[in-house]
Amino acid sequence: MPTTKAWGYVLVIVIIDQLTKLYFLNILSYGERIPVLPFFDFVLLFNTGAAFSFLANHDGWQRWFFVGIGFVAIIVISWLLRRHQHEPRFMWGLTLILGGAIGNVIDRLLWGHVVDFLLFFYDNWYYPAFNIADSAITVGAILIIFDEILKWRTSRPIKS
Image 1 (cartoon, rainbow, N blue to C red):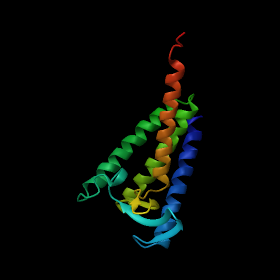
Image 2 (cartoon, one colour; image 1 turned 120 degrees about the horizontal axis):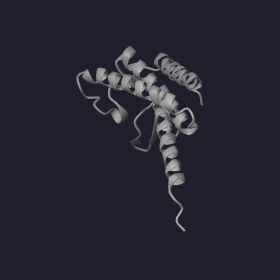
Image 3 (cartoon, one colour; image 1 turned 180 degrees about the vertical axis):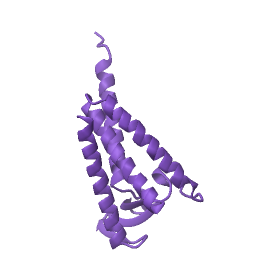
Image 4 (cartoon, helix red, strand yellow; image 1 turned 45 degrees about the horizontal axis):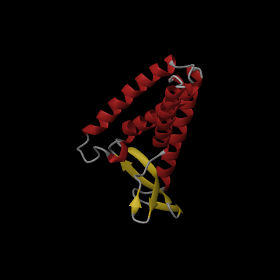
C-alpha cells in the first residue's frame, strides 16, 4: 500500500473517531449511560490517563506527557510507513495505530482528556470504557503481531 493511500485511511479513522466523540459529547452528560445490549452501553467518560486509566489520578502533567508520546509515535509510525510500503499487513497495522494515536492526541489537546463512550460489562465486571481510536490501535497492534508471527513462521528453516 502506498504511503499516500495509508494517510487517506488514517484521515478516515481520525474523522470517524472525532465525529463519534463529538456525537456522544452532545447527547450524553458525563457518566450518563444508554443501554444497548445486556452487556454493552454507550457512556460518556473521560480518561486523563492512558490505557486502563494508567496515570489518570495525577495532577495534569500526564496530559502533556501523553501528547508528547503521541507525537513521537506519529513521527516513528510515519517513518515506518515509508519504509515498509511493500508489506500490506504491516502497513494496515501501522495505519490503524496511527489513526488512533492522532485521534487521541487531538482529544488531549482539545479537552485535556480522551473521550470514551463504549462500555462492555458482565454482571458487576466492567471493561474500561474506550473509543474508536482505542479500537483502531488495538486492532492495528494485533495485525502487526499476526504479521510478525507469519513472517517468523515462513522464515524458519523446515526441519526434515
